[in-house]
Length: 387
Ligand code: MLT
Image (cartoon, rainbow, N blue to C red; front, side):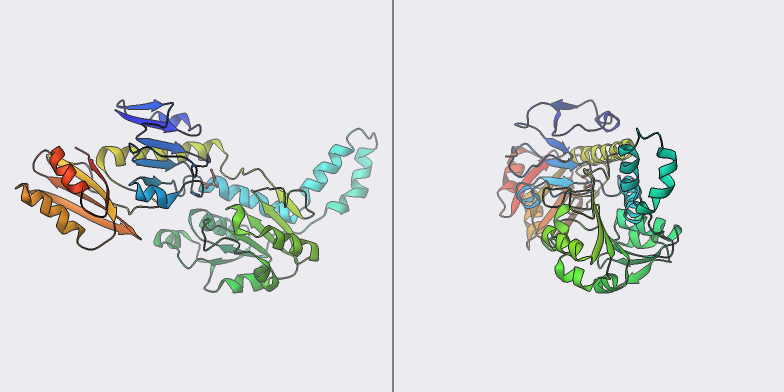
């Protein structure tokens, strides 16, 4: 029986995919798997039983990835599963930044009791006039699942789209409209674009990347959209840029006390992926990935361990080993089986940064003694008999 702890509510259509030998538990203490959306896991002590965490969403800044890797806990996310939901809200953000729909709506609400309202509308509406996005230049920083979708829709809306992503995946590149201009220096986006939308993960290397230095290089009156993560934009610097007029509007899904209420800021309460469809898609993807990992050892869409797939085990036994990415590990693993005269029928070993993952299918049932011998090898952090 595999125990699943949900730290946030996970959509029912995902939970229903858990096989019968999975049990949802209340306590984290002996969970095998954790499902999470936005709960912060940084202060949590994860039990030794924990093998995997799946985030139903793309961003993983609420999970201590290195600490998990050291405990042999594979962290999954669900890239692309909520991309359409976020794409749609970014397009709404583009329009909100261009037309004063919020000001206009508020004015009508404030004057709703006025019997002359229908007449005064025509006199007052010029206060809420705006611009069209057709023909304007949009810079998309980060062309992952969301950024690429935003870029493509913006092209179809008649915008002149500039895309920047030094790490763009082959899949994302194939799916990108050929009309998106490929930019290799982000400063060209700063210099050229009327609107800039950012779609990169929150990491040490991206923290505060939209700062005063970046704003100084931008066009006067540029509009900035941030539906990715708060820390990408330096609050104090964007406030200064708004007050000088360098930035004319900042639309963000990440309000905080420094920016909420500031003139020119439109904040939403992290609604990007809060659609029924996105929540369902993320839950289904998260649960499928977790079950494939627990039942077969396969890794797809992990952020701290490499992708690794050996299908379903048709041999007598399969062992999965989470370990450091250091020399000579495979020789040591195979040596343990050789010393017991056990034949290895298939194996795979992949690495990602400092961490690696190996699976070996063998011709005989794996004993406790073998598990113990593998666990003792320096650099091994978890050994799991899958079958
Ligand atoms: C994501 O990271 O997938 C989105 O920001 C939505 C979310 O956090 O759930």
